[in-house]
Image (cartoon, rainbow, N blue to C red; front, side, top):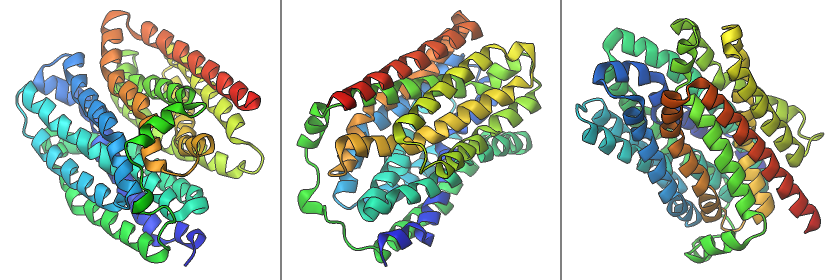
Length: 399
């Protein structure tokens, strides 16, 4: 079977479901449960945010290594191992009492994030499906876009019924009982349906892959854009429900609004698919970054009407959903498909570090300047991303 048919096959849908559950359990669990966590443990926002910050920093450091594993043909094995580690880490997290144990559990989650989430999945699909990878990536992201829609209400319901510790333990059980087999079977099915890639282990990336990527035209501009976008997005999303509640929005409405981030991501991706033949990657990136700037303005106006929370989540969610698809495409366009795993891991390290620092930075801003300071920071970051994209386009035209 060729790559086009495999891109529509059951293996891709299995990976899509595995990614959905992984993001719900590993990535959104902090935002979904931060309020009951803080109430139960009595820590301030900065102490709470130190956990996901540490996890993302570790994921950033391991990103090139994870990419090299994919280049050596070990993508599904990495995803399976990451899912298993993530399940164990969540079960550990459900039992913590002190801050040191809390950080230890998040450190293990960071290792899991490096191996189990989008970047390894995308690199595997690009390696196996070649030019047919983009439709497969779109399918994965369309399904996984509902991760936050699953995480926020499920977290709220499980916490209300059984407490936050049981909610986290159940998430760990989902990783072990569902995600591990989904990643294992999905990877095996895609391998069965596709020929071995031309870039086999003998041509896998080595230490020089990182240096080659750093010397490539546009590397630092792309890295800057991804870092700015990640910082901008996760500064707000990490404390989305508390931010809404503190602006006078009812808790139930705040949870509902936060749950629309996922469907908005899917909607943005569907629009991009529909306009695929009429809008290029550059124009799509302009529109995405512009939508994030508008969303920052809406965030500052929520006090005027509680219903503006939905305008914010739709704009921000749709923009981030489109950026998820554009990110691997922009990297492949600028740097080529060869050794994609290591190159993508290297170029996204600054973005992962920025996302890691985002919750802590947001906590400091909220406790100091308040929401107005966070809005100003978001607007400034949006402007910086637009400037960096303009410089990238100018460099491409001159090159």
